[in-house]
Image: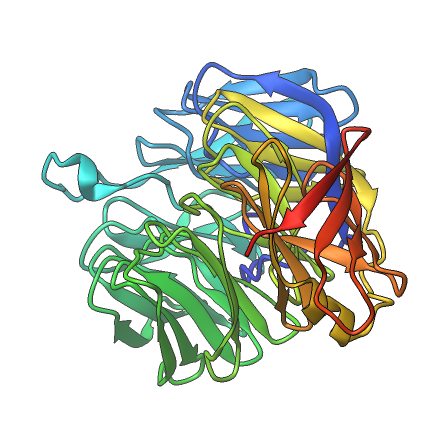
Length: 448
């Protein structure tokens, strides 16, 4: 389901991998902002063409499609042989996994009005979560709905002060969600009774992630929050560079990874304190949500690309491109990375094992290489030491990770398979880089 599990941690259980070439792409009739669900050899994804599409993972061919009311920008959940999806018309659908046949529907209420202003950024529907035989989903009617999975009958609903586009997280008998009224709510999963609410000061579209007794989420109040899950007590608040946060955090290894809008930043925070661990400029808005697999972060952005980055440093490992912006989450399937794009396609990229990322070079060599270098054509590369690793900045791309050997040779797969050697006199800073790119050799001289 959306964000990997009912607690919305965004943590994949599959082995870490990087993107490495396109396997196939499937064309729908509209933008694909839905995050695909993977089950039974299928990728199931919504499109703004009004359909939910089930696509075979092996060849990328359509197995079935089902018409859903209006744009399908939310993400499906799969429970056994049932697929759950909420349409833009507020109808919750249960479909058969194998054929897409209708099982039941439940109509929620009409959307709470928002002034006709494109800056509303009402981009996504809430995505269902399934736990204990109950489907939990937010509605544009301002309600959180708990629905019996087997019958489609509503068990309870709880009213918030505005639209609920946040996807509920379910953990330890509680349901956590945000609302356009600026609050994050904690409800009893059995009864819908409110346990606590926390006012962030602005719209919450971000879906909470629950891990280690904490609840993490972002808000349009330009901050990331960490709350105590049991009480709703604020543990920390981290400002996010004057930027709305619409996406949801991924949580693993004590880190909270989240992207921002106008900040163009992806950052990792300490889950216990909110202290910044790293922050990288992606060069584009990150409105979707990252996924963590082992020590790799996968994310899409408005730069049309799917990126694989190092969890410890945030530096880029590999990337692949689509032909428009990406707003959904990136999903790992067996041997594939799936992502929807505003170019109307669902993409499947091949994966490759994560290459070794340990330097054989001493820190003194890394520091000697730090500086700005230019080749004869005018292209420039800036090398710096970042968290004990060699960082490479090139053109308008996010920074890449270079792996350096003791003899000064290095590779930076993020930049088109860039390889090179640090040229220096013993005990002195490097004065050049001997580069190999696209099969050609070039010398990059240090720029004073």
